[in-house]
Length: 223
Ligand SMILES: Nc1nc2c(c(=O)[nH]1)N[C@H]1C(S)=C(S)[C@@H](COP(=O)(O)O)O[C@H]1N2
Ligand SMILES: [Mo]
Image 1 (tube, rainbow, N blue to C red):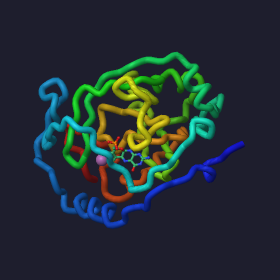
Image 2 (image 1 turned 90 degrees about the horizontal axis):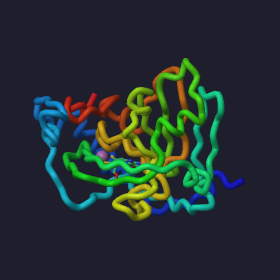
Image 3 (image 1 turned 180 degrees about the horizontal axis):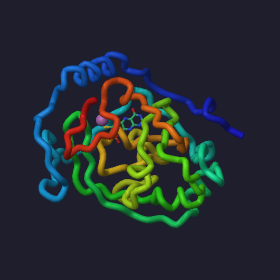
């Protein structure tokens, strides 16, 4: 069986960029000190609208071939899943259109995604009652964490397509998670593993000064 170490990575982790973002978090850069709600303001505080689709990651982009791709749901579940891309694409598909908000201040409206809603996949894996958090892991080594209520929302999608076309590798293809109500660092590209946990396990940015939850309207940029 192909495992993660068979997935080629190109690029190098941009340590300088990671350090700069950590400094921003320490200094509280970009904070406006105001809060709002999605009902009152489509654009969260301190954000500006873009029409292009910026690419943000650690500088390493895994080249995940469709044959090697696996999506695993494990930990505190009654029925662990390990899906091939073919199996994933055979599940009932839905589309969602939503806005994305990156903590570095750009927002992009009306992104159409196709894929499988998170609650549908969770229903197949059957989370145990003790499961309260998820730890998410990607092929580039990136990790992030969510409370189960933030993860299991019906608008959240394991997405394989954006704007009607297969998700490009640079945006997380073959499959990324989309969690539109939180800053976009909570939406891992190239997702391969969902682990259901009793205790929270902060991810890559969360241990480097980013907020643990990341609600854009509450301006939860940093810890
Ligand atoms: N696997 C992985 N997912 C990731 C990241 C990353 O470095 N690796 N960066 C996050 C951040 S900070 C942002 S803003 C979005 C960017 O997604 P995009 O490149 O499609 O715009 O991906 C998020 N998901
Ligand atoms: Mo980001």
